[in-house]
Image (cartoon, rainbow, N blue to C red; front, side):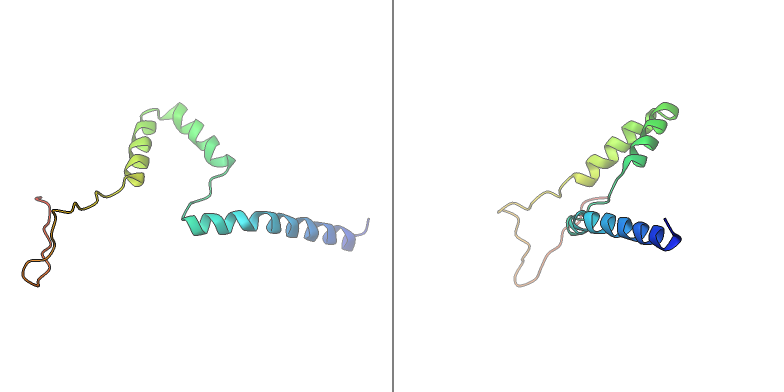
Length: 91
């Protein structure tokens, strides 16, 4: 097998990988997801072994990221005599 044939096969394989993975990349981009691969799982195992308390903080961070903002009820009226009233939570 000559060098040009080898480069052709490498190009074909690279093109096939791109064509196969392109729909998943578009779907992740559309849904706003970040891709995670096998390396992420391997690092999670290492993190679990050497820093066990990081698991709880990671779980809390994931729950906070997935939490939804409370919906306003029907009794909440943002208007006060043709003015919009924005109430801020106490600090």
